[in-house]
Image 1 (tube, rainbow, N blue to C red):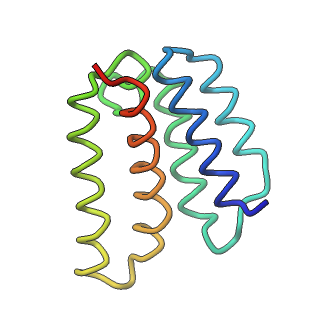
Image 2 (cartoon, rainbow, N blue to C red):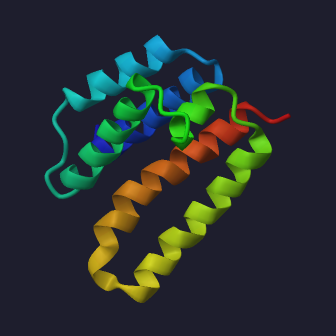
Length: 123
C-alpha cells in the first residue's frame, strides 16, 4: 500500500474522530501516523501537517481549525474553509510552480480532511 493511500485512510479516520469529538482517538491516530515511515518525496510537508494537527489538539488551540473541528465546527463553516483551501491549492500552482509540494501535500491533506469532515457532519 502506498503512503498516500495510508495517509488518505488515516485522514478519513481522523475526520471521524474529530466529528465525534474524540480527542484521545485523534491524538492516538496522529501520533501513530507520525511514527510510521513517510515517503521522502512528500515527507517534509506531510510531517508538518500531522505535527501541526497534533500540536493544535494537544495544546487545545481555540483558533486552530482542526481544534474547532474537534469541538463541533459547523458544517457550513467547514464547507467554506474547504472551498477556500481548494481554491488556494490551485492558485498556488498558478502563481508559483516551486510550491508544488505545498499544494500537493500540505493543502491537499487539509482539503481531504475538510472534505471528509463535511461529509460526516452535514447539518
